[in-house]
Image (cartoon, rainbow, N blue to C red; front, side, top):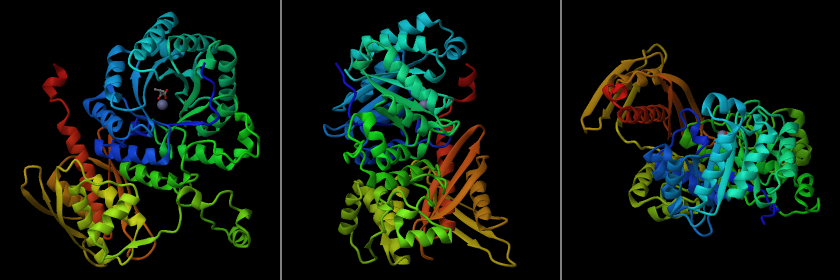
Length: 531
Ligand code: KIV
Ligand code: ZN
C-alpha cells in the first residue's frame, strides 16, 4: 500500500511541457545542461521529454537518463500517449536511468472524446487500463494522466483513475490542461478523488496545470491542502500557451508559508522541516539558465525571480526596510541564491582557476568547450576588470548555446552617431566555409547590422522581440541580448552575451537564424509533403 508522502514531490517538466513554448526549442546539449542544473536544484522527478516525438527528443531523454539519472539523482521520466509505440519508445529512452518513470496519458473530458479522440468513454477506459498495464511491463514507476481532467465528468474520472491504479499506476496526475478551474474547484476535485476512488491510497496524487487565467499556482496550493503530494511545474512557469505553474513560486510559497501548510501534511504547524527537497539557493541560477537557453525572458515583476522581486522603489518602503527588513520583505533574497556577486576572477586568472570556478558553479565543460569559453573569458577580462559568477555564467551559457553552428559571425563593424547614417559591415562564414561580406544602412546601428546579416543569410523573417539586459551593474558590464523572430507560424530565439552590445546583438541574430536555417533544412521537400 502506498501512503501519501510527508513531503511534496517536485516534478519538473521544463524540458517537456516548458519546451512546448513557441520559440523555446532547446538542443540536446542545452537540455543536458538544464537537466544537470535541475538535479542540483533538487527536483525529485525530471520529465526529460516526449521520447516518441522525434529522434532528437528520444536522444535527449536517453542522454539525460544516462548522465543525470544516477542512483542518487532524480527519477527520469518520459511522456507517452496511451499508445504502444509511444510507451515503448519512452521505455527505451529512459532505460539507462537508475530510477525511471513512464508517464502515459489519454484525455477524459467529453469535449476531447467527441472532437479529438472520437472515442466513447468505454473505449477510453479500456485503453487507459490496457496501456498502463503495458507500461508496467517495462518499469514499476508509472504515472497516468487523464488529460483535461479539469473539464472531465468527475464520476467518469473516478472510474478511469480506479482502473489505472488497478492496472499499476503509482502516480495519478490530475491536469487542468486548459487552465480553466478556480482554486476552490480544483481543491474540491482533488478532495473528490481522494474520497471516491476506492484504491487511491495505492497511488500518489499529482497535479498539473496551465496558467491561462493566472491561477495555476493558487490551484496547486489548494490541491496540496486537499491531498495532492506531487506538483508538476516548470522553471519561470514556461510552457504551452500561458505556461505552467512556476516551480519557484510553488516552492517559495510552501517554504515561506510552511507554518500554514504544515498541518495539511500532518505535521505540527511550527515544524521547520522543509516541505520539498529543493535547494532554494539554486533557484535564481536555474531561472537565469532556463531564460538564457530558451530565450524566454523573465518579466521584471515576476514573483521570486523577476529583476524587481526584491527591489524597493518607494521612499516609504526603502525607509521601512532600512529600519527593519521585516517591514516590507517576506523572504530574504539570499534564500533564492541572489547573493552579492563575488568577484572571482580577473585577467590574470589562469585556465585552472577558470575551470575550477566553473566546476564549483556546476559546469563540466569538455576540453573543447573549456578552450572556447576560456578564450571568451580572456577577451572579456581584457575589457572588464572584475569577472563575477554571473559574468562567468553568461560566457559559458553563451558558448553552450552556439549550436547549430551553421553560419559563423566573424566580424561586425558599425559606424554611427549624430549626423551620420548608421552603416554596418558584417563578415560571416557559411556552412560550406566560404567567407561572405556585406554592408547595409539602417535606422540605427542594430538595424544596419541586421540588414547586413539578412543580405548574407537571406531567410525572410520578422523580428518580434529584441531585448538587452546587463548581467551586472557598471558601465563595463556584459550585455545580454535576447531576440525572437518569426518565420511563418514558428518562432526562433537567439541569445548572446558580450561587453559590446552591437556584437551581442549580431551574434544573437545569427544564433536565431542558425536555428531557423537548421529547421528549414530538416523540413521535407515540397514533393515529399504532397506525396
Ligand atoms: O496539460 C496537460 O494536460 C499535459 C498532460 C500531458 C499531462 O501536459
Ligand atoms: Zn501541460
